[in-house]
Amino acid sequence: IFFRVDCFRSCFGAFSSSQDLAAPMVLLPDCLIRCPKRPKDCITDSPSSLSNATTFSDTDWKLIDKIRATSPSNRCLKYFTKAYYESLSLIEQAQIRRCVISGIENPDSEIGCYFMRPTDHETFGPFFDKVILDYFQASASSIHMSDWDVSHVGMLDLTNLGLPELSMRMRVSRNLATFNLPGLMDREERIRLEKALLPVFDHIKAKFGGVVYSLSPDLGPGVTNTNLINGATYSALVEAHVMFQDMEANPYLRSAGISANWPYGRGCWQSDDKECIIWFGEEDHLRIMIMKRSTCLNEVFTKLKYLLDMVEAIEGIAFAKSNKYGFLASCPSNLGTGMRASVHLKVPNLTADGLGRQVKAVCKPLGLSVRGVGGEGTPIG
Image (cartoon, rainbow, N blue to C red; front, side):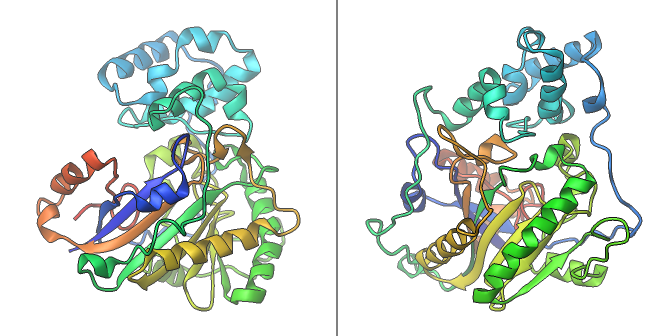
């Protein structure tokens, strides 16, 4: 059984990127990917029905109170109160409903809320600040810091642990400041985002080559998508961990509206050497990543920084960012640097139960998360 070791910190407050790399890493099992097969005409357009309601009913508030009492780890409902909701304007009430609906429909959420606009962290600061500070165990005076200088960390070489060359991946989440975040985007805006990214891919292809793989059936009425791939290619990319899985299968993203309009505006670019990958249209506008076999995390980190700098330097690219929280993501847990580092390991004894209870028990005291190799929601072991 293969496991994925994930080192993930959003680098909020006292954390910095160099501290992240020096920290222990998270163990994650490597599991067989099941490639979803959806009919071509199965296009999803509607977010949660509850999110489309004009207001929360008395029944809804009773449900919220019940979830708050029975699911204390649900930070969204821990801090989302009727008093705060009623203090907002009617327009703001409609907006924040979209932000919190996933936590209501998925009581087991640890965060339970998503940003819908790059300004939501300010508009709904009295709510989101509490969620963020609770999650990161930070103080109200904390300010995000990013430090990409790892010269003082030394070589993070797995051979020092007696490990061979392993599959590694590092990624950062980024969103463009000029678009709504994925939970609020409609089909037209998702297509506009994809079209806006095509010149970006052309620019980086001059250095890395590569191919854009798109899932959008078209780029608007009568506009052919020349990057469209077929189902077989998509399945192969998912199995190779190059492309993300059908987002409609994720109940948290579905409730938040993030998976709506699937598969429009979704896809990825991969370099000729297969090591550089940029997802577009998943939980965030962009997931910029490096995936390669190595024994040294520094190699992957350095290449990721190079690719990220190249994208960020392109004219017209402006990432959504907060002076306090750093780079903004759909999920508050990804705020800051939004970086995750992963390594695949074989640790069969820790996942013999098929649920990953033992590996979670080992990782939890270290502040590390456990996920399947296919990402959040995939089987462990």
